[in-house]
Image 1 (cartoon, helix red, strand yellow):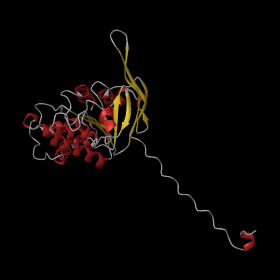
Image 2 (image 1 turned 135 degrees about the horizontal axis):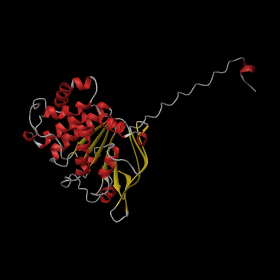
Image 3 (image 1 turned 120 degrees about the vertical axis):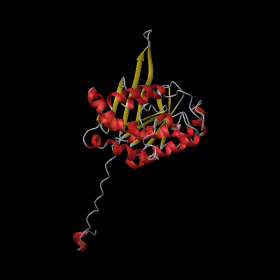
Image 4 (image 1 turned 90 degrees about the horizontal axis):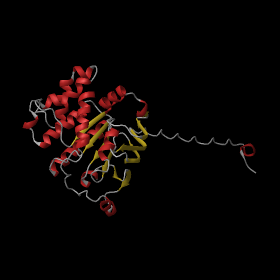
Length: 290
């Protein structure tokens, strides 16, 4: 038998295992979220049936599905415009269900940026005034420097020479760029895009998604895109299909995924008005509580 005592050698201590880095906290974490509504005849309509979803900092997630499957309802819940019937929603580890309405409104304005299909720009206000509008509800330095911050954001999206232009004088792509600048001007932690390319041609839509992807990557914001367009969805880090109230992971390079997502045209444009429910309601909510 040989050991340290008999050989006169000193046993080397076991090398310490390096501790594993802590798991990154998800920005968005839905756990078993449901949403029901009661119809006029008393029947219960199940819109979402146990949705689980986590989105990390800088991650892009896309959700596709047929019209009427609850995509806008999901986005309403994510953006704190609506509340789930059951389940849990954690925002950076904070249980949203425990927040009072005023705290929810504050977090919606501080932590979320919304991009809609229909732009929802304020008519009679310049591009600069539209982008600066959310900062009217900001505090401290952001409030006092709102005009400069808005101008910087418009320059970032390529509209530095269109500050004083009215919305009706802008092209569709330019209006969406203004809408994106407005969504990003407060430095949101989560960007929610509901059919952001639905009213645009293919090339302009691609440029708009480039802007959103760049913004999420540069700022570490989570990006959630709701779309009918598989070509747009394929840009995301992960894709899901919402059907029968359940969110199912898919891989868009799989033929089965395309079949299962029937009525979602590959590379096509979304139907007119798709996603307008969250757009119209969300716009009013933002004007009141941003």
